[in-house]
Image (cartoon, rainbow, N blue to C red):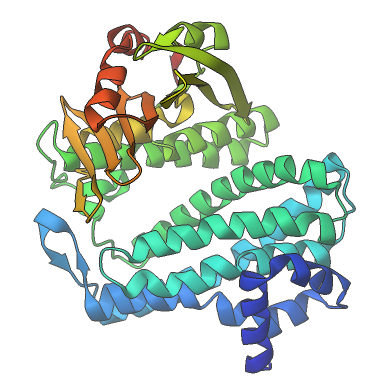
Length: 422
């Protein structure tokens, strides 16, 4: 184990991945060598940072106050997370290897482990920021997104898939790995329950009921929404366990879909609006300007769908861009964010401002720059649809007026279309 080599490889993967991936793919290696010389070191960063934050520094829960996990339990959680992370990387490599032929690639377990391990680099390194209050999660999220980019770039080099198929290869891999990590999360919770400790179990876990029952949050509160979310995940997890025991592949597929749907924040399957249903909400004119282009599409993978309509408008002096999105399969998360998450931001600079707030129970985002006379104004409609207008204008009022001129009530009336209860 050479610490300098590990640091050099991590830096190269983050700063110059396009030139580093060919080197990675060409290196002779083994599964054991990859774990010993790279994975076991970097994979320790997230659980270690989580331990420091949860047991040493404490985590702020907003109105609920600050919560610090007892040291013993924190160490146990760190070890469990670390071990399951190592297992998760290997399972991820199995997924990449199994999918290779479907995307014109070549099966190779060592190369599959390379692309997963080195792809994770950005997330592992960025996870150090977990210890930073407030913004740490955002840095880690950016690291995770960059890791997806690294995975997409590395697949053609390691798995020999055609570059034009790497995006689809990446998308399917990520979706399958999301399911894997959900299962791993439940495994962590199960181990904690076996050890007799779950700090939030009394509120959020249906398996923690005893003769005294469990506490409940007030109906309509953020805590009640979170409790319902946890209950849905628990039910979906039990469904998956039953399907696995039955050996029925169809039941297992349905259970996996239900689990993914629950994790995405909903208790239903949603079919996104067809393009011809979304197109009427893209008007021929906007703010008195004629439409210059339009594109409406519906895309999906593994049962998840989303529809998007975009258009541009111009009068030769000003240009506005309209985007209408049916979040469909993600509507559960959108609804939770809009109704309960309490997202709020108000930032001012020398040249403009940016705000995120709730109006009429829905999220609103507005941004304006005086120097460039450019801004954005968007809102969530019916806890499902995202509508945004951006571009050059005389003021933010023009963008607000443009959004208000759209048939938002008609769009909101479609919030239940295509929704099927699981």
